[in-house]
Length: 328
Image (cartoon, rainbow, N blue to C red; front, side):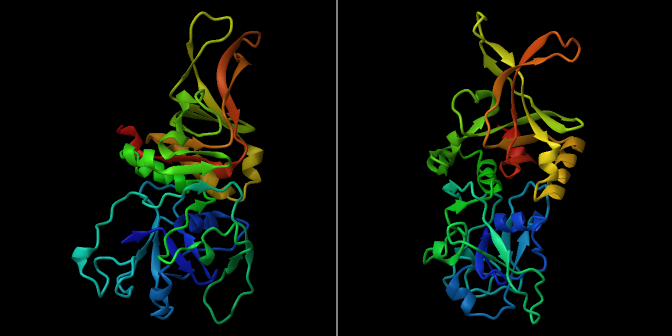
């Protein structure tokens, strides 16, 4: 049984697996999921056992991954009868009543919060073996806190971690009907997942969406990285008779990366992308590439057209493998 929420003892709060990944890579926080203790998010089930009854994580610390991150039961993990987080190997329930796992993210957040969830360090308790203890400062930002949970302990429908809706889209890409049914809100814009995620070649259709596309090349310059997309945008300039295909790219400032709270993880992600022979995809939110005339390097007096943008927030930018997208 896999699920994306667990109760974290040191935070006294319920976290999604994407919250945990975010904390693991945040260099401003002392947090290591391997040293944390996670338990069943169901309140009644958790209360029935001692602190030794724990869950473990999958893909919580890998910068690059293909299979959906999640929490999972250990062989010794126990649940009460009726707990929704039971696995076929968990004592107390008939294995026939439990659905088999797959690699899809099943918990779709209905909103991506643009304000990142904040944490402050809690005084350490020497009697515990957890090195880092933090607590959310605001119930509003702590969208996975107890107040945000229903009686069934379902995963809260809001997240501040961009990777969560991206994984929902990628892992469920083959299920077009599902992506059409599930809503997503960012800021004042609401649309189905299938519409909110816009292929880069159709960026002219609407602004303020999550744009994505297959990467053609990553250029490493002195002050920035440039990500070139394979797809082109068809566009007609005012003085042209018909539309022409124009390249699309986004720039990542190295200064922006140097000041990023997850700098090491982000640089590892970029290095892996540059060295990788696997098909890679880029997802970003917050900027829309605009048509620009840029000087030619071979002949500075000449210009050429390109759709380009400067990424402004690395929290809303991802480069990753996504085999399911290549098959469609």
